[in-house]
Amino acid sequence: MRSRLLPVLLLSSVCVLIPGRVGASAPAAAFSFLPGDTFHYRVMETDREPNGKVSTSGFTYEVVATGNASFAGRTGLTRLDFIDAGEPGESYAQYVGATAAGNVLQERFFGASQRMPSDGGTLTATTVSPEGEILDEYPEAAGLRWNALATETNDIAISAPAYHYGSTETIHNDGSSSYSLHTVAGANTSSGTRVLNSDGSVRIDSRQTGWYEGIETIGLPFLAGGRYFIPITTSGGNPLSDAAPAPAKTVDVPDWYPSHDLAPRPLVSASVVNEGRGSLPAVCGRIGSAFRLHLAYASLTPYGGTASKAFEDEYDVPGLGNVCTVETFADFYVPDDGIGGKGALLNSVTGVIVSTLTGESGPRPLLRDRASTPRVSGGLLHRFLQARRFARAHVVGRFDRTAVTR
View 1 (cartoon, rainbow, N blue to C red):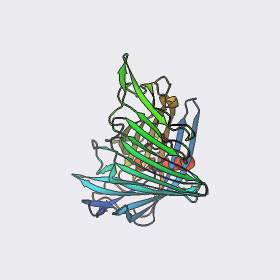
View 2 (cartoon, rainbow, N blue to C red; view 1 turned 180 degrees about the vertical axis):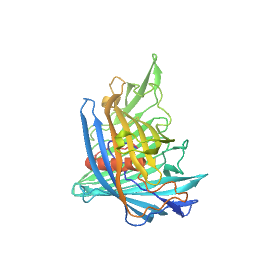
View 3 (cartoon, rainbow, N blue to C red; view 1 turned 90 degrees about the vertical axis):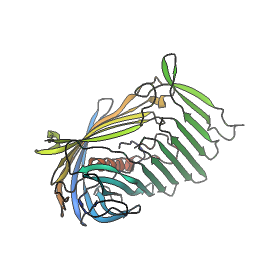
View 4 (cartoon, rainbow, N blue to C red; view 1 turned 45 degrees about the horizontal axis):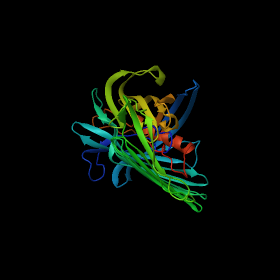
């Protein structure tokens, strides 16, 4: 979903279903596009900052769909390339397919690839989701519901004259994750690992030239004097010129988690329900009825001192696909990661993103039941928008504990 720093590779996808197979293990049908199918989307973003400032921006991009694509060992997928004329040298591609589940066909995201210039060099990144994140279920009907999370692995590499950077993160359905990075800049190197457990406890190890290894742990909240506190223990991380690594020091931080006790389980949730047909809202700029897919998302990042909430309504018109997506989001943070803070989340950024289909061209194969056609789903739009943000403000060359969130 949302991420303010390192990527979850956002790239988008437009899909059509016809009989076929996804790789060797998929049951029933697969997405298949004819080369050259195109879809034109316009995205409007309105952000409201804590100081009350409101900013609106808009851009148009083109999606080119190609059938019978292969990715990460799977075949029979649809590849969707997002093209932004204002960003030459950047490429974004997503791979989608379908699997049968009872009486429905599930549209799934299996991975993405990204390439862009970076500090005189090149950044490459891939996302692989082995089981595939569910984006929609067909034929669309009121009452369909599913979990919009799936395990995925993100790999990033930057090769530039000044440094080389690589990182890998695997994120699981319950929000737990493992992360590692390695950076070389001249004679200096830095590396680190981070393990986030499903209960919210964390261990972070960081190493760099000329310094002792730094270790930080975030423990489980404990009750004391009628209030909960979170123990944060640090050791090492000081220069090698010192006689010995810095001894362990523990700070009990006022519990800033939303419930002010234990971390929620799971740490990340994303549920979708098809609420049936209804009228398109005025903000979509078109009239008519559509199926409304409502997504509720929430996440907590103990190591970053952040929490996020988002609600999204995606409007699908049979015979046309996704014509409009309206997302309202709010990101919160604890000042100084809560260390020495007052144990309260502050509102960081809130906003609304509206994306609308402005035109399309090329053949439009239909589902066997002719209930739906090519579409750019809201979940894929999220990934594309995240990739754009990452391309403009990425952080490398140091171990950044706030870096990767879903």
